[in-house]
Length: 425
Ligand SMILES: Cc1ncc(COP(=O)(O)O)c(C=O)c1O
Image 1: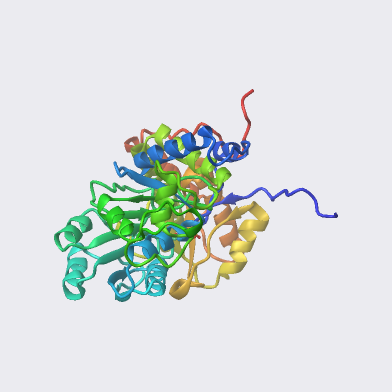
Image 2 (image 1 turned 90 degrees about the vertical axis):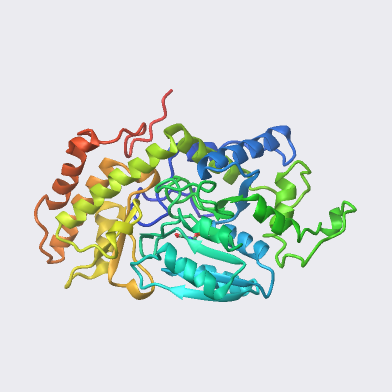
């Protein structure tokens, strides 16, 4: 065998996710495996359920992990909640709204959409009007859409849905832990996420929470796998996917411990550590940290003379879309950032492709040194490409944000300084 042990190049991941995992998460993931029904393992599963109730701000019993990347969570929620032929409303304001629509169509729904120009969000009145026109059984709406950086306000939507007897599903993959979110206070029935953004982990596990109303709908379609039948009769239309059948996955995570897949143990260790990190810091403190470093990055790119895309008042804290200046080759600049500085910034999709870069400040990388390094490197890359960038304009503007008395005059502390992943003895 000629291949060598894996040794990825050192990178600072400042795109829209994934970002560098927190070293604590990586250490947790290297722990030894235990058997699926070892009391240690079922104990960890129960702990994960409780930890994610804190992360999602919910008392929902049905709070657990779907194994797979964030879209596994989306697919599990939609395929389990949607009865073929039922009406689903998807308000779309970016790429991931289109994804919800596609998955709902594949699940056999009669899908109605409303669309916003990229860079805008919906008002609650617009959503209510669409509900009145379409009379859906389910509303599927993204919170933070990384493709446009917009953060759709959700606080008033749940109440509207309850008033019209509509189930409310949201995808918070990109926004959770970096922006305000509260599943119970906002009356949301089904929420799915991922680890690779503000939670500071790798992709591969999709935390989910389901209200009692959602659980009831899913349990009305419960069928036990033939080979492990427990004598109970199946109910309702069978959920079209085995892997994403939330009725079966709930039986596995619940007290029955009815076997389904083999839980992805190392991912569970990682997901558990992501939640512990967040709850140790405090959800509000983590959101405030993302707000601070996001504002510093925003001021920094504006200080470099760059234009910011979209409605800034509705931008997620953790990512900014920057218009590529005329005369600059966007891909060549990203390559220079990577090759000369080891920093990754993001490209973009669909109507924004070739027009904006997306720069993230999230999870482990929502830190002052990461913001300053990225702005310093970007200034050099812009200048090398022939753009006018005021010397020190980016780092200077960011420094002003950090020094403002309103931010305590100093940066947020992080217990692991950048690039020194030194483990104390
Ligand atoms: C809002 C949103 N939803 C879903 C996804 C898909 O996540 P994954 O690639 O983990 O399946 C992403 C990824 O960027 C996202 O930002």
